[in-house]
Image (cartoon, rainbow, N blue to C red):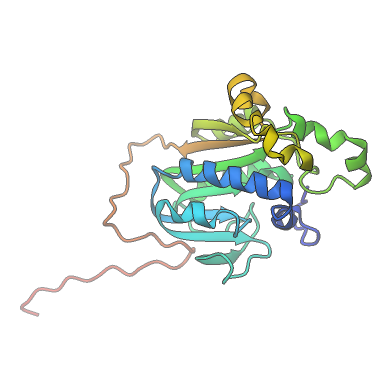
Amino acid sequence: MTPRGAAHDDPLATIGHWYRTPLGRYVAHAEAVCLERLLADSFGHYLVQFGAPAQFAEAAATCRIRQRVVLGARVDATAADGIGLRALPWALPLATASVDAVVLPHTLDFCVEAPDILREVERVLIPEGRVIVFCFNPLSTWGLARWWPRLVRRGRRVPWCGAQLTPFRVGDWLRVLGFTLETREMLVFRPPLRRALAPRLDWLEPAGASWWPLLGGVYAVRAVKRVPAPTSLRPAWTRPPALLPGRRAEPTVRRDRGD
């Protein structure tokens, strides 16, 4: 996992390379399909995603949120198919209550500051804004794989070096911060073996979803930020909020015709 302030050999950067392996491509596709589904009823001005800029570009493009912003320790401003900003997940360079939705693709898996990250997400989200979290499920063959002797000898590389957070623990953190859990989905019921990607094992996905739904290798959680005071949804015609702190639009001064 990435300690606070670490910049080298960052698992959050390495997972982008893992997503291009056969297993990684399979997981990325399953997550992208799920993300498109979870964003279908979201709208607004800003969708913020931390890391993995290429894997979810098409899924993000289908939602009704106008601008996609990708954050990361090594994100290139031109690589995000939108806005790219270099940032650390526990110190987001974004204004408070400025973002409509945040996507964390395995961000919590590889940072020891997972509660701090969710606290930052709560800060930047508008009331009724949503966070979508993807994590590897320790209660699955993917979770057990980190203890396989061959993987231990490899130094527990990505994705096996994660924090092993259960969906119940992540859900508890979100509830403490005032979020309401809307949905949880389990994905990827094949074991983490390249030969398990063979078409003859396609039956594992529908069978797993029906018969052992808690054992998916990846889970997705969507939660909505609730506030105690009654707050209406922002109308679609309002100006977008200032995304970066300190950059606010000046109000227009209305003058009488007799001036």
